[in-house]
Length: 443
Image (cartoon, rainbow, N blue to C red):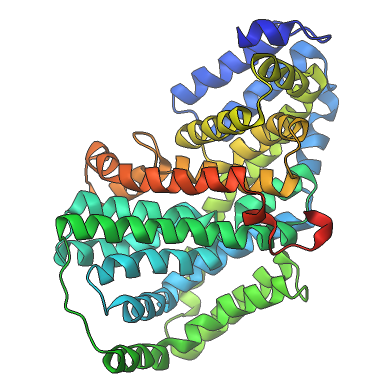
């Protein structure tokens, strides 16, 4: 029914649209790398439709990634890798544990907090899941948590990697839709923290029900002394996120400049502490380059595909088709959230943003949704998709780390998905959550 309604538009869709989409689905199902699947579909669509001369494809690919803002992506990835190799990420865990040690379920809550702290630097959910998982999963099991639940807890906490700024996802969606990344970072701060709090509450509730982790209460003086000791031994680790947050939110640094300063400061601290050597650089740079090498080709090939879809009239057709079914804004918002969560289950953030943002943005505009709120809703919904059973990306990351069954982890992730979905719907329906920190012009 949806496609029949789309075909009723002034631009009728034919095999120049359907065949590339079918090719993309088949290639992804065959486990072909996403960038290759997108590239093949884009080139086939351009050939069949004539939307863009093939002689200009190469120029379009390089133009798509020739943006200063994208320089921040490898810088934040490298910063996260350096943090792990220098051991500074463990200082985050020590402080997080000192903050939450006063209550039952303290180390589980500390795990969620350290995921948020790491997210504020690396900007990547998969990197956060791998780094935090290596530090905490075994200790969570020793504390009394079942291994599948410990894996689900880390996978949920790592979702904040793209939700708490600075985030690679917000840099990319800002590039695609022409919105300042710094503005999106500011808008995402409250929603990202709301998701973090929802994960904390979920863990506390589950721990209360099943009594996974014990631990007695301590007096305020004992807690303060414990926290003071943790901060005294690891305060310097917070210099890096402090630089990033102050630089970006004060307007003194662009995200790219903040990423560059963070890399330099982190490396310098590694040398001072003696935890980083020149011999570590080749492996460190190769590791970061591999992650970056996955993201940029996807962006490069996705942009010509997005251009071809726009020329074929797919975004306009989608808006007409959906609004023909219902014009109720509440239903349309709910539909967009479900589409984004489903997309987040089966594909990485970058291709979802580059392909879906230009298609869904006209629908959001049609119902009067604030463009900043739309961006925050989109990234948040995609983040929920990372742990939505049974295909969430973070579930596979922690399964690979531990060897635990995906299905067992997915079953324990259901409470986290439910509470995160509730927050996502609040973000989607209440604009103030995303715009409260922004200047009046953006509201």
